[in-house]
Amino acid sequence: MLIAMFISVSLVILGHCGFEGIQNRATVTLEGIDFNKTLMHGMLSFLLFSGALHVNLDDLAKHKWIISTLATFGVIFSTLIVGGSAWVVFLIVGIKLPFIYCLLFGSLIAPTDPIAVIGILNKAGVPKSLETKITGESLFNDGVAVVVFLVITGIAAGGHDVTAEHIMFLFIEEAIGGIFFGLLIGWLTYLMLKSLDNYQVEVLLTLALVMGGYSLARAIHVSGPIAMVVAGMFIGNRGRLFAMSEETRKHLDSFWELMDEILNAVLFLLIGLEVLVLTIKERYLIAGLAMIPVVLFARFISVGIPVTFMRRVRDFSPDAVKIMTWGGLRGGISVALALSIPTGPEREALLTITYIIVVFSILVQGLTIERLATSRKFESA
Image 1 (tube, rainbow, N blue to C red):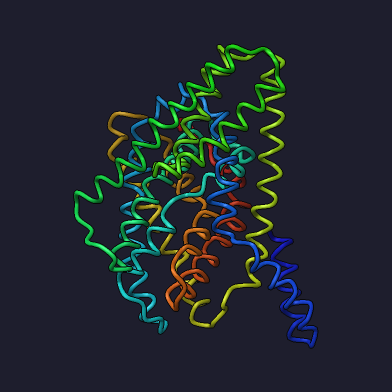
Image 2 (tube, rainbow, N blue to C red):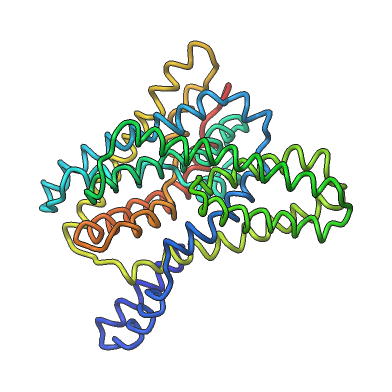
């Protein structure tokens, strides 16, 4: 990502030095790539399934309450804190946005990105149980974040009345529906895997599960990301134990690890190149930099409150909140959601500000979380 950003900035500099043709060709090429569709309707299903394959259900069950709390109430708290603070910050720097769009910004920046989180935490050396909490939260909070984002988008667009019943129905349809749909397609694939002993066909079945399952989830209006997480955990736990030979497990892991590495590289390359299509204005830059500590504070509060209450019944390291705050990375999903906002001045401002926060999150938080983790002595996670 850093290399891609360096290339993008170099092209911009060349454009200002009289080589507009090079910059224009690169910009036109990048504009031809719909980042939102590429990630949300393409890469995301593969990346989430790959990440969920290696999540241990027993470990996840031990921390189900903190994970579910962070993935639901944590997202809502963060949305409200960031949205309210953004309205004040934007007014100060001269960005006039309706309050509802500030809340929309809060909702798209609230979820931690499982793609960025899993990629970093695997190498960060944090305790296993703490890694499970952060990874589990990031895998499941997409469903809640998408519901909140869709509700606020509906209010901002003014297309229909948004009632409590509508919000509840949307949550049940997307999140709960995604869980049951993921279990269903995971179980059906498990039955097919159990009836075979041919690793080539079994790997292809998991590929079909991801591609067909995600497309069908979108068609029936349930959360594709949550469905892929649930299906991935079902295959990675029950399927791995009862439906695969040792040879199949080895080839399956090798295939999905390679898929994960390739798509991660492409994704962060695209994020770095997005600099070319952003509208960089001084007030957007100032607002983006000012919102970085606000987003971190919102993360600290949304993590700190649940952990403080749960310390009465569960053991947590004294530094757990700090690690979970700094390890809650924002990534491509926030950029993709910002790109899905209808074209207008609101989208231009929010996209640039979101991009600045994502760049800081991945480059600064992502490259320092390992140092922060190794500098702490954890008694318990």
